[in-house]
Length: 444
Image (cartoon, rainbow, N blue to C red; front, side):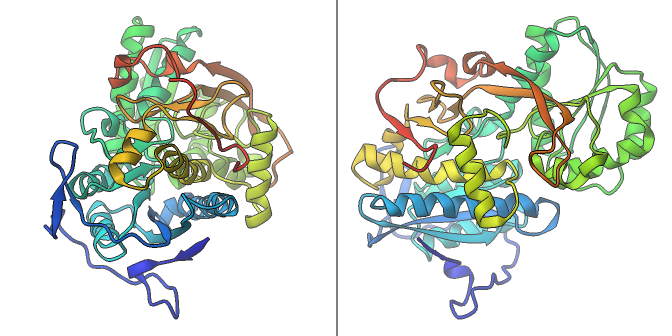
C-alpha cells in the first residue's frame, strides 16, 4: 500500500500543510456529462493505482477517531493489495486533517479531486463536514464513502447517488434505542446533545421513533451545549431539576469523556438512568475513564471490541492492536470496511469507473467484523445506507481490554429490519439482494 499526503504535503517531509478556510464554492474544470442526471464529472487520468482521498479529524477532541481510522484503513489496504489490489491496481491512501471544519474540508476534497485525481473520497467524522463534502462528490461525480458520520440526512433528504455509508445512521441507532426503551418501564425522558447537525438529527430521529414505539413517553427537558463545550454542568443541573427517569445523551468522542467525568462530579448516575444509543459506547471512553467509568449505563456504538464474540471480530481487533498497541475506537471499523467496500464494488463491476462502482455498490453484501455469523451487512440500493443489526449493552466490570476496566455486556440485539424503518430503504423489500457477497471479516 502507498500512503502519502498527496497535494497536502511536501513528499520530503510528509507533513500536513495549512490550508486557508474557504467558502463552499465548486469550480468548473473540463468535464463531460455522466449518465446520472447529467451530473458533471472529471475526465479521469487512469494509472496503476486506485487512489482514495481520506478526510479525518487529526487534532482536537476528535483526533482519536481520525488516527484510529487511518490505522484501520491501512490494515484494509494492505489486505486488498496482498490479494491483487483493486483490479490489479495498488490501493493508495491519502490523508488530511479535516479539522472538523466544513469549509476547510470542502477545500481539501476539491484538491483531492482536482490535484490528486482520486478515484474516491472516504471518511469524515462530523456530520456537518459530511453534508458539505457530499456536495463536492455530487458536483464532480466522485464516490464518497462515509465511514463514521451518522446524520440520516445524507441518505435521505440530501441523498445523492455517489454517496455510500458503511456505518449505521442516526435513524437506525435511535430507532433501536426507542425499541429498547419500549420494553422498559421508563417514560419521563430528557435529552442533551451537541448543538449542530448530528445532535439535532439524533433528537429528530429519536422523537419520530418514540412516537411509533413509545407513544406514552414524555419529554421533560432538552439541552444543547456547543460541540466541544468545556462545561456541561449547568445544563445537567437544569435537566436534573426536571426529574427525568432517563437522560439520553448524544455526545461522541472527547465530548463523551468530558460529559461522563462532569456527570460523575454531580452524582448524575445515582439520580437518573443514562443512555446513549449512537456513539456513547465507544471504547475510547472506557479506556480514558478506566475504573471511574460508571456501571449500569445503557450504551451502543458502531463497533464493539468484545461483541459479537466471533473469530472475525477477534481478528480485526487483534490486527489493530498489533499495529497500534492499543484497542480501536469504533471509527476504525468503519474505515476498514470502507476500503473493502470500494474493492468489493470494483470487483463486482469489473471497473473503477464511478458510475459502474455506484451500480455495483447497490445491494452489495458485506460480511464485516461487527456482524454476527450468518447476519451480514448489506447496502440498501435505494439509499446507499448500510443495513445491519444494532447492539445495545450495559456497562459492567470487564478486564479483557486494558486499560479499560468497564465494558459493555448484557447485550440486546435489534434486528436490521427493525432498526431502519421509515426511510428511503422502505422502497426495498425482501432483505439482502442475494449472491453478491464480499467477506471483509479477515480481509479475504
